[in-house]
Image (cartoon, rainbow, N blue to C red; front, side, top):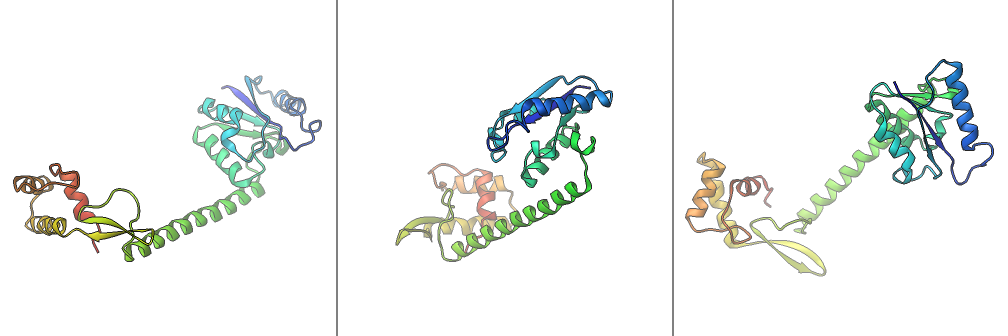
Length: 226
């Protein structure tokens, strides 16, 4: 299986002690000492690890590797000095079914302390993501309780008015009567398509002055009307 290596030289590092040549020699020596196949390709970056999308060498590597390929790096911090980023890169490598080899840990990419730290940081990151979702949900709920528009298209049954630079939803009486009809049809057991046909047969129209179709009826029924 192909063996690749990844080399990174950050702009704020000692160019001599961490040069591409130093990294390449360490990787080649490790491969020779462990009877590995010659390195098929070296991927290089001369960027700080802060922004992964700007590290074209790394992105190229992740797009190249396949199942059972091997990737050798001199040190774990060549992937990134950021634990979360390192965890993401390792996950991408594992997702492809490839193997990561780190020279400074004698080839062991699963150093217990490193894995523990990544798991801890990942847990906190996941917790923060959940907290952000909760805050967004709470904010949207509060805005809705105040009648503020939450973004996106205006839901059927409402119009938008601006009060003190704040967009608010107000009920459209004509459309609210249509919603009441839709709910009655739904309670009678009519299908979404049948309800849409009923509305169209009555000459009613949607927000765009066009005929109703079943997905619009579905959204109207699912919308949490205040």
